[in-house]
Length: 166
Image (cartoon, rainbow, N blue to C red; front, side, top):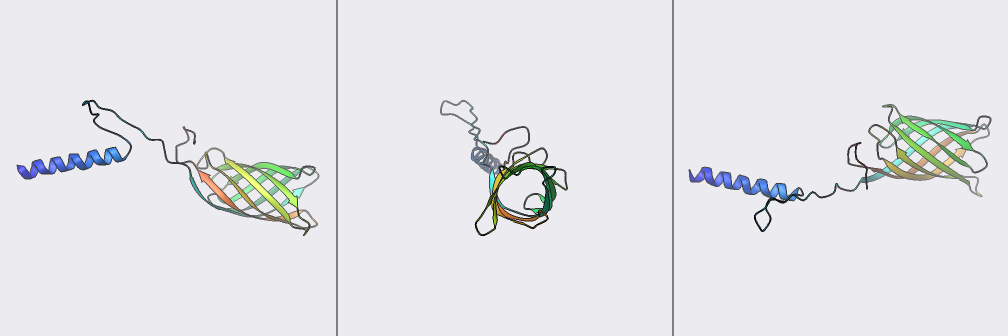
């Protein structure tokens, strides 16, 4: 009987400790019950790399490209390009149909290299609430075909799609 009681008390003590550690209190000093819920952890941040090839169509003001990106996998992308501001915005679509909306700016360097700054936010699906930015280079040939090589950060909210990240 004593062993059974000790087991039950140990179980209650361990269970209450785990419950409290998860962000809840069971008993207040006056004997009442009070629950504290702590906010969700911050979004996870990790490295992001994107490698792609594509082409600008100056006649239509569009660009298409395809490649591989961390957290996205293989993808296709399209966008609207403004040759005056050297900016593009569009959508990256993963093979799973999940999307990232992106905006990028291009800055020609004296060396002939073109630097790129891309920002993105997630659309519906598993990339919901994803955000990030990447920097790198775009190599452009005479036919307006290009290679894109970017590195940066990717932030993914750990909450479900019904709640927003802070």
